[in-house]
Structures are given as structure tokens and as C-alpha cells.
Image (cartoon, rainbow, N blue to C red; front, side):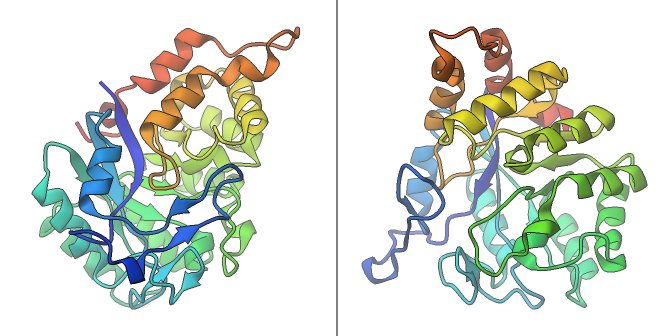
Length: 295
């Protein structure tokens, strides 16, 4: 089976109105990608996987709309983001698992976590300290992690850089996760994007903490970074803790699978080390849901 651990919720139940369509040209160096999309477009993209984790982002306290250009951009859903995610998941429960989004600085964050868990059935948390512009070690953020640990909710952190102008890059450095994981050892954590470009930092944090994993999303379209990250994971013996994720709509699962299987192409004809291909297949077919307690 194939589980996509990293996808973004579609903003439109039906077709995207042409006057609302957004195309992003900064996410990837090789392709422009849609910034907003429909339920049908999402489901078509996920046809090659068995189940997907889907979420939005609570850009600011009060859940004001935001997107790839930061708060106020209509490219992404934020208003009532958890209701929007839950509605989508409830329509296709055999295909989707929903994660909630909260802003730690929102006065109602803890109530929203309880509502999202109990009433909406959302089963994890998506946070991005850079996108949301919060201090990941602020006491209000620690309360979010504590709640997630207590209730068995995995937390998927954006780690690594971003092209969003308003996002402070240091807030999403993977070494911050070392501190969080040390304080909350029973919290299941996924570091998105292997912390790119700080992939070796992500690798050593994954190695240190038994409940910390990383996903492979957003790497294959930078071929050397992709190869280098997986070689580091090979040398530090953490390939078994890498989870499959596409970061749709930035990339599709099919593209990500093809990119993984061709990771060694960049060093063909050289004596450079290779990522073991059998380990690549294990990443693609890993039972991430069981590892995260979501099965």
C-alpha cells in the first residue's frame, strides 16, 4: 500500500472559477503549479495512493485567509479551515485522514483542538512556525504540543525554508524539533521536507528521537538536494524513518514516486555512493499510518 502523508486541502468543492485560479511559479524551479484546486483535481492526483493525510494552515490568530503570499492571500483556505478539512474527509473517509490546523497564539486554540478532535474527527495537527510567524518554543506553542501528546495526535511540522515573503526562516529550522521532542518524548512528530536545505540536521534529529520521522515531500525536483538528503539518511541509518509524502499540489504522488526511483540517476557513470533501491521501495510502500498510530 502507499500512504501520502503530506497533502493540502482543496479550496473548492467544484471547479475553480477562472477568475480565482492562482498559479504559483516560486514553489518549484522546474514547473509552475496551481495554488488552488478542486476536490476532483485533488482526488485525481491521489489516484495512485491508498490513503492521504490532508490539512490546511491557520495562517493567523482568528484563522484569517492566507496562502503562498502570506496572510490575506486567497490562494489557500483558512477561515473555518478545520470544518473545511473535515467536510472533505467525511465525503471520502476511505481515502482521507484529516489533520487540524491551529495557531498557537489564538486565544481559542485549545478549544479548537478539542472541537477538531472530538466533534470533527481530525486525527493530527499541522503546524508551520514560519508560515504562522510564531515562536515554536513559546509557552502557547508548548501547550499545543502537550495537548497533542496527551491525545495521541501526530504533529506534522513544516521544517526548512520557504519562499513565502512573510515567513521567518529560522522558525522552521529542524534543530528546533530536537528541543520539542526532548520535552515531549511521546509526541509523534513528522518533519516535512527533510528540513531542506538543512537535511543533515533533520537526519540527526530523526536518528536521536524514536518518535520523530521525516517526510520526503518537496525534494525530488531539486535533484542534487534530493540525492544528497537520501545519501545522508543512508549514512546515518535513518532510511527506515522516512515517510512518503507528495506536498500536493506542489507535486503529485506519481511525480514523487518517479523522482524517488530515479534518485541515483544524477551520479550515473561516477563512483559516488548510491541510495539502495530496495530502501526506496520501502519508503514508497511504508505503513506510515501504523507508525503514527493512525491505522
